[in-house]
Image 1 (cartoon, helix red, strand yellow):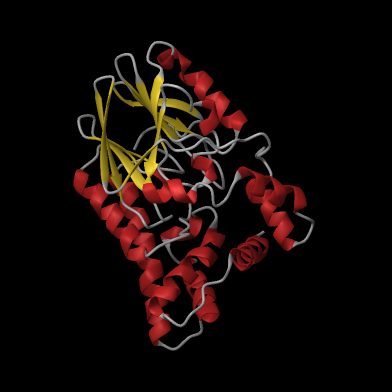
Image 2 (cartoon, helix red, strand yellow):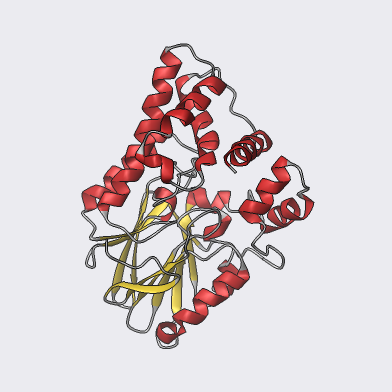
Length: 320
């Protein structure tokens, strides 16, 4: 799409805005504002309070007369919800899927603050500083989700219709998209990473591919991804193609009796000859691939989060 990939608020349809944060790498997520008559819907907040304040300040030209009455969190990752306290309060409904509402408390901001503060100058510490050291996790207090749903939920706010559709588990356990059927705009959360390598914390991979296909079937004219530039269904299909590439590549290597570690490294080398090689954050394969391998081999024990970060850090260091 011929839309500028620039930081700030972009109107993507009449009264529908995307907040875009280049370059979409670790922590730099997107959000959305749907402005109705006297009330608005906010789709996601950002990774820390400063980033979220900047966004909310830029939105005041609309929210001064149409204040935010509904806040939707597309999933539980902090870069999409750690700014909630600046929006939540009397008269504001905070909405998430039932699963996302449970997951929000699993990685509290205090844990992220401690991880960054405790990161040393070893390989893992340098990666933690690279991915998260630019954000301030102090002083964040996560307010409760006030409305949960499973499957689907329709919002009618200020004359605007926003359909919330649960498509997880995929990227996380409780992924939700926000679909505006009249404007043909969809906010995908992290079902779509554009120009950046997707990362799968939950899976199964088939659900994520199905989520992309489900969005495609809606025939949106504008796709606002969780990370990266505004796109259309062509960008979304690239995400699905990557996931199929990884799934099928690992399946072939599993059938050839390769070990998980060897298969992942071999697949990573194969990516060098593909269109996915230029995507940012290539190390994320080393988090996604074990999730898929566990689907192929029920006896495989998925690495814990410390081991995942060690693998991410080692691949990031290798590419520098």
